[in-house]
Image (cartoon, rainbow, N blue to C red):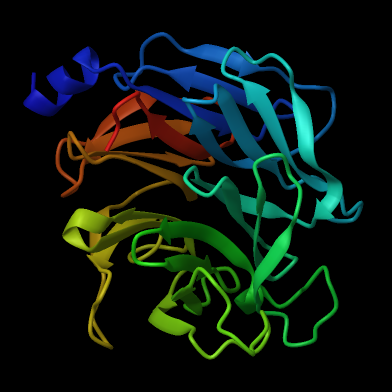
Length: 308
């Protein structure tokens, strides 16, 4: 048994993840794959949950629902840690197709990417005061059809005042990109004409969810595109020089989606739409399958009371 596995079995953390099949489920499991629990059951409608975050201190789980794009009923839900008191804090139609979700506990904000909405958004923890921070539409009507403008994954560097996001591009087109900009819109500018947006990486297959290791200035992401560069977990320096090639850490995923980190133990957790939940060291070694055939697994988050 490896030290990483021993740590995973003895730590006090939990994984929370989403199943977009079965009309949508919120589930939880130990980091070694044991003690699988269904936290929130289907409410009898196809919500297509995608991004998830947990606020242990407040006792809340938040997740995004892509909904049905033709019905324009994307939403963000919240529940207690035991699955009780489920409520929509961003009501259906308040966002188009919300994807990865992040929490700024200090300032009481939720951040997410809105795929067909072609935006990066934030709101208060109760769903009020929705703000558009990035608008990639270039005047296109919403919901947008140009996949190069679809915003999907998001990560925050609160201390550095930056947000990071992915735009996946069409399937297997090699047009995916990862961007960075300030958490606040520069004075005199607006979400559609910001001058502080940087393209960090381009010509990627289909980058999806993001995670940052701020101490080591490293960015990690999943990619859904075709092999050899797609269906992978990747990393690269956050401040890489132009033209730097990302490093492929793991491959052979079946439509890779969710990504979560236990930075203290140097482990990551990731999912794919085939229903598998994996773990591995941050360098890609010691890969393990924790759960198999769990539906269509999307977002995942690792949390513990003293998590780094």
